[in-house]
Amino acid sequence: MLKSLRVENFRALDELQIDRLARVNLIVGKNNVGKTTLLEAIHLYESKDVYDATTRILQRRDEYSIERNGDQFNLENLFSLGSDPWSSKIKIGEIGGETLGISSAWTWREERRSEDGQISVHYKLDENRPKNVVGAQVRFVFHSHRKDRISIGALDDAQYLSEILEQEVQPETSLLLPSSGFTTVATNIDELWDRVVLENDKIDIVLEVLGLVTKVKIERLAFVQGKRDERLAVVKLNDRRAMPLRSLGDGANKLFELALGLVTSGQGGTFLVDEIDSGIHFSVLPDIWKMVIQTAKKLDVQVFATTHSWDCIKAFQEASESIPGESLLVSLENSEDGLRSEVFTESELSVITRQSIEVR
Image (tube, rainbow, N blue to C red; front, side):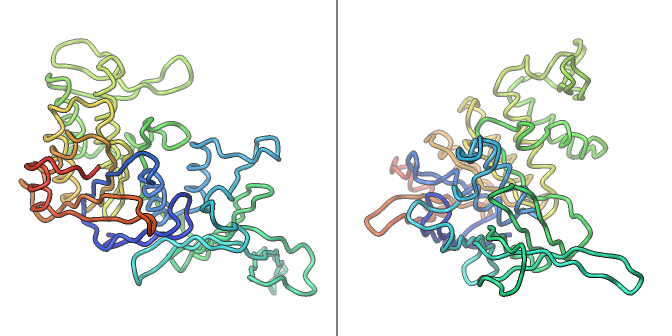
């Protein structure tokens, strides 16, 4: 679990340091201050497959290279506007701890022949141009803080040229829920449901959260094959016939994604939610925050969420006070010295909400 964070040269975050983090963190600040960018930075740092996570972020933002007919990802967009992508380095990690670095380097392929004649391909890299090497190219390199993995992302062909020193593929434990919701670009929601379909305790959490909006007990939820080669979520309410989850409204769908993402992040995982209160009525926000904090603690998940809503902040404070020691509010603000962060504990949040002190 991240205890602190430092980000350099990543999008709008020229330099940002957050000295303290908790299990559940609510991030606030004005528009365009970098809240969504901060979620993306944390998501990349915590991802097992950092290049795959990067391309999904670029795809969600439609950040393709115009010069290459719009079919290649433009990795230069990851770097802050004030830095040169080919001479700068993105750094994301804990203060004084392990770091994810993204920078350019010369890369090339080497073929090795074993004693039995088998040929294997390895990717080599160096910050300086290698001498007497044919086919060396400058590419963006992702140095994962997990020392057993290095990813090489090519700007010119957007291929995943990965030298994975640990051969076993690990399941992803970092999930990012965009403000627009899960999509096939981000995460297939039916695949998330398949992860928990046999775990009754997690299914109960999801159905209980849905009940906060429907006010009717949901007996069952399942995915069925639709007409457009997609699986649709269907619910059964008490003794009524089954109906599409979408029919229950945007609030129910948002809560389903929120609860499902939380319970599928895995032990020690990270769940990030952009605009957590979007589409949800303010009256149920205190119960939702209590569910988030209790479930994150129970399942050992770290949560980062953003909001613009004062109602969401007040609900967060109420839930944090009832479950102490698990939550912090992080306020981002532009100053003359650049972007700065300020962290508020539960007791400080109580004063802020009672006196209506503006922190957004």
